[in-house]
Length: 79
Image (tube, rainbow, N blue to C red; front, side):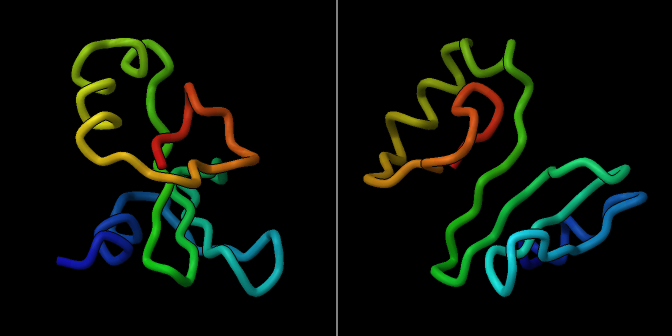
């Protein structure tokens, strides 16, 4: 299943474009949950407490990204 389709299948989810034509934003309960750009990159909302755990660090170290979400709170959004 496509990740965007999965995100939109969550209860009370909706797609929005608050910043113009790009990026697509998926909201759950009117709060941003996921951000998709046209380059097949995604940023997902995460629990700040989870962000400091080893499992989060392992994901970030395993899948390095040269341009992390520049305008995103890196403790709350996993890019």
